[in-house]
Length: 396
Image (cartoon, rainbow, N blue to C red; front, side, top):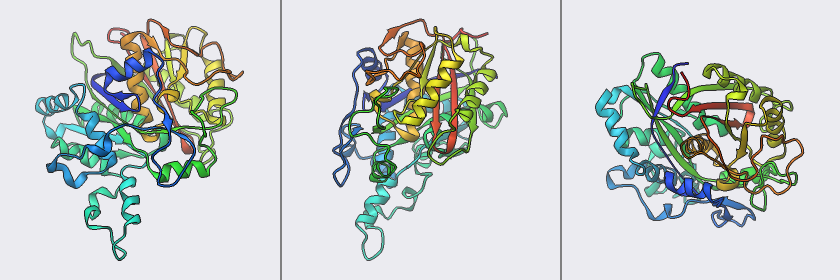
């Protein structure tokens, strides 16, 4: 696969706003989880909440799109020079040649929940009578409208792999000549449907999550927004690269992965093949690592049997919580920071390693020369994606 340049990238999560906040938290092993103070009814758990969203409405010109999800997206779009990079791409290629390809699992469902709580004679209350908001496409529609982009506009909703799979969509569209650049990424925010839904599945931990810990007892849900711009590289480019991706679906169970990790292994193998890599070439893997029993069990075994001890691996959900449809882009950004800074994130929260874990696991932060990094995103229904990134000049 011809590599694609990642022209700009950014993220906002419970760790803070922008690349510096995330790099600093990773470097100092400082997590962002806190006791749940979000749900309308008590729920004893920890969440990765982004502070201040409630106090930052969208600009007046975008008021029809205003909701928690789009507010968080807007916050992320305004940092690290990202909005200027989008405008530059539109100027360079034309509005119809820049795609908006975004992943989400809940979109603006929090606003819909609020509307149903406040029904006015069976109708949405006047302040939420905005049809564009109550749709899974709200996020992508909002971003396209905010930047006057007229290219393909696509929402991917494949649970936790959503904002990883958009990278694959972008590569295919660019390779086929349909577009010249793509804004990829995703946003998911906290809402009661997610908190109580996962709790009903007995997957939510009452404590901060502990990925790959032998005593782990569930996930911590977080919220995040992240974005990247993909385009063809140019001579002398120093931008990091997307060099491969893999996608697979094991279709084993709605909420449990295949017991041997069949779909995850297929996605991983596909990513390595597209990138022209062998397992020994990989310096760091950002694991999906949710702290649920089955996910960590399957992923730990997959890494242990596939990669040499020199490959480092960790989950960063102990820092941010599981940001659902935004997990793919958030952990892609963290992987890009690992390449940029030469920092392997520690596996925050784990004190007693699961015996299935191999020597690849980085239980504490490390310094390393990271040329190649993978990012795993494994969703409900066995919908799996793996992304391969490289430092500029690391691949021929």
